[in-house]
Amino acid sequence: MKIFLSDDFSLGVSEYFGRAIANRRLIHSILMSDVITEVYCLAPQFAKSLGELKKLISVGDKKLILLNNSHELSQILKSDDIDVVLCSDFVTNYPEWIGIRSTLGLSFSVWGFTHSLSYQRFTAAFYQIMMGPSTSEDRILCTSHSAISFMEKLLSMVRFQYLDLLI
Image 1 (cartoon, rainbow, N blue to C red):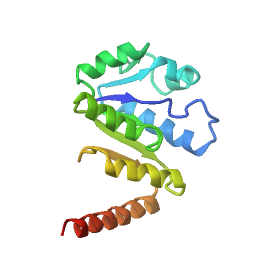
Image 2: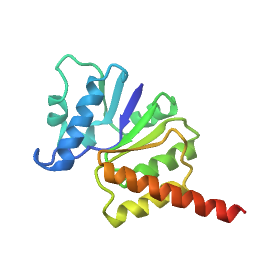
Image 3: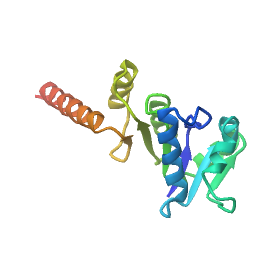
């Protein structure tokens, strides 16, 4: 599996900030996974946190591939070789990556990571995602049982409303 990290995952933020701690663990797990063979990221996006990113992997690890600019990213995307685009926050750029995939006719999945759904911006982003060309392979990765329960209830309500419209 080949993954593209779509943003810097707040790795440059204080090591005691909750989101940064969870993101470090996620990135470390991705880099250590045997299933994931390549991890791409744009070096300029990680400029402030590149040192932190490199701490998460061993010196000899060749899994992390730094792309120097958007042209290199474009070439990787055009090859349709990326399996997953991973967003640190499903609000920040998750809907945009779904749009890019749809516009360019690519096949990667879009996964967003979240820790909380208690902010209004999450609900707005959720509806953007629901109305966009999502696929069954797109995911929102969540660390909170209450957020998972909320999403299940919300999806159920939306499904019933759509069924009512169709009848």
